[in-house]
Image (cartoon, rainbow, N blue to C red; front, side, top):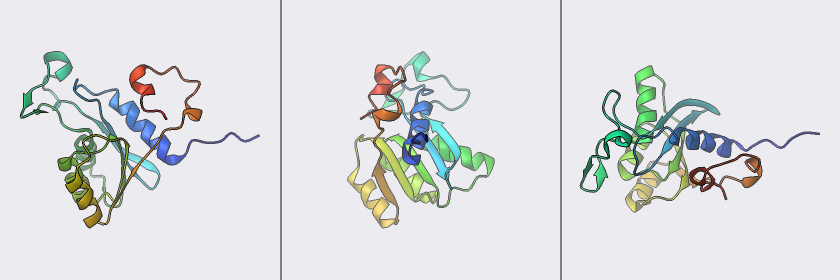
Length: 162
């Protein structure tokens, strides 16, 4: 008897959820996974610049309603590709939350053509328009309980399941 396998979109999104658990910003834990040809090429979570203090230790550094100490998960994943010389052209990104406008612009400029997100989060109309103009696509992934029913998830993690 063959066991049903988790679909690719849910598999990669769960990787992003796992990455979000490493977040050091207390305002929102976000994870991002960049995938090319069904292979993970990078991952990131929101947190401070390496070597700087973390929000979880000293609080968020908020300016104009934004934590300026934090590098967004999407940026960390793209910067990881840049650091190690991994091309992002034609890749896909899986993000736990809809990307902000700045991250959307960076994702598109990096040549990423598919944006998958789990939760709505201040979905920006201009970001959606840019995605369309760039010829990219965006879709919301739903995680199915049937693949995770035997896991003991905390309240934060179970909030991602439908």
